[in-house]
Each structure stands twice: as structure tokens, then as C-alpha cells.
Length: 170
Image 1 (cartoon, rainbow, N blue to C red):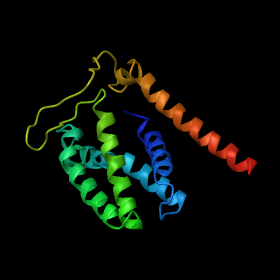
Image 2: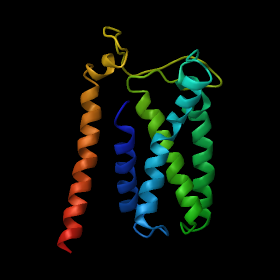
Image 3: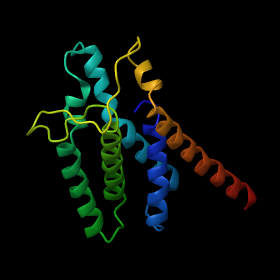
Image 4: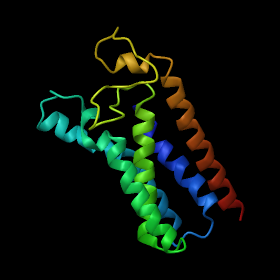
């Protein structure tokens, strides 16, 4: 995924806000933390480009491992549950980690992700993007899967516009 991680975080935040109507967190903070979680795994790109010299696919780093994010999510959600869904920090941590899991899941759509890392270092992707164009990122832009990213972006935009309209009417 190239452009849909941030919008997917926004969609996740809005869905969670509807599910947990009485969250102990200001709406803007909740949305911001969720969107940050949705892009956070790609912070490993700094290491990939600046230190590693692109020698290892950045999806092999621990920030793109389900085995890293799943335990963090369950620990945070357990704390949130034990607080009767009242702990601000547990709620923020839960949504951040869930959004990071969403990021890794979305990356499996057309990007190799090492699903069972660090136990099994084999890449997995739902669909393969053939290398036909230079630079490399054009292969993803011209692949049919980019339409899915555009749909996610449009979905987030529609939610945002509807919310803005409902706030201006009230």
C-alpha cells in the first residue's frame, strides 16, 4: 500500500468511535492516535534507507511482524477491558496497536509480508505485482490493486465530508 494507510486509520477510528460511544478520550486525540498507528510501521523506512542501505526488505523488520503487534494489542486491550473501558491510555494504546495491525494486514494485499516472522522467514502476499516499469513504484500505481487504495481513500473522504456536513448543520 502506498496511499491508503492514513485513510484506513481514519476509517478505523470512526468505526471504533461508533462501536465505543463513550470513550474517555477527546475525539480528535483518538482519531490522531489511530491514524498515527496506521502509518507507524513504515517508520522502519528511515532505517531501511539511512542505515541498512536497502539490503533487507523493510517488511522483514519487526515493525512489520504480526508477532510484534498482536501481543501488544492484546495486552493493551486486556488493560482497557479490565478498566471497564475507562482507561484513556489503554484505549489509546489498543487503537494504536490495532491500527498498526491493520497496516501490516493491508501490506499483505500486494506487498510481501513475513507473516510468521520471526519463526518462519517466508514472504506472503495475496496478489503479486509484476516488475514491468521503472521506477519500481510505477508497478504498484499501474496495477489493478491501486484501485482498492483509491476506494479506501474515497471512503475516508466520504466519511469526513459527511461528518463536516453534519457538524455544520447542528
